[in-house]
Image (cartoon, one colour):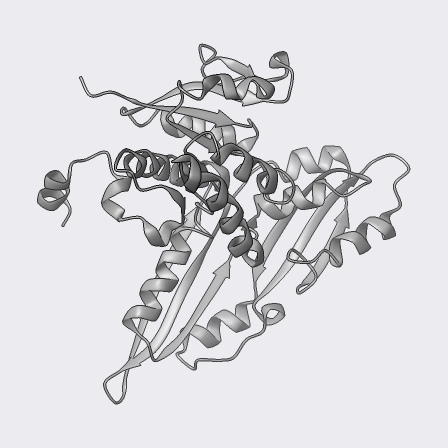
Length: 328
C-alpha cells in the first residue's frame, strides 16, 4: 500500500473547512489534525474523528506532518505564520496580497531554505491558476496585452480585511467587473485600462455597537492594497441581513490575452472560472499543491516556491506514465 501524505491544517475558517472537505476526495492524503488558537469546543469539524490541536503545540508535530496547509488571512496571519512555520514544516499557503508577494516570498524562503523545507506560497486561483494563465499568454503571444477580471463574486481576502477594522462586527466584500471594460477587451481593441476602470468593490458591513459608520467607511475606502485604488461602495446592514443575504460565497473571473501573430492575425486566449464556493475551490487548489510540495521536498528541492516553479504533473496523484497515456 502506498504511504499517504500526512497533512496538518492551520486554522479552521471557511478555507480550513474547505481543505478538510477536499482531502476527503483525495485517497493519497490524510489529515493529522487541525491546529487552532480557538478552544476545541468552538469548532465543529466535518469529520469528528480528526484531532483538534492547540496551535501552541504545533512544533510537537514536526515529525508527524508532511505538509502544513496554512488557512489564515493574508493581512495579519500569514505574514507571521508563513515564515515562522516554514522553518519547521513543508507548507502551502494562499497569500494573496499581490503587491507584497515578492517580500513575502523572500521572508518565507529565508526560513525554509536553510532548514531543508519546501514552502509553496500564493496558491489558489488568483494568485495561482490565473497567474499561470497570465504567464502562458505573455509567453505565447508576446505582442499583445493581458487583462484580468474578477467577479462578480465574494472575495475572502478583502472580506477578511474589512472584518479586521475596528468597529466592524461582520462584513463581506464583492468584486464587480466593469462591463464596458470587459466589452472593450473582448473586442480586441487592446484598451489601456486603469485599476479603477476595470472593477468596482462593494462592501456590506455590520457595525459593532457604538461604532461610527463614517469612520469605518473611511478606513475601508483608504485601505492600501485592498480598496484605495478602486471605486468602493459601503453598505451598512443588520446582522440578520448579512446572514440571510450574504452567506453564499460565489466568485470567479477570467484572464484574457489579446495579441497578434505574424503580420496581422489577431489571437485571443481566455481562461475563466465560475465558482459556487470560492473557499472550497481555493482549498482544492491548496490541496493539490500540498501534494507537489511533499514531492519536491522528497527530491531535495527546498526553499520557497510559487506556481511558476512547479511542474503540473506534480499536482496529480497519477503517475507520469498514466498522465501521458490518459491526459496528454
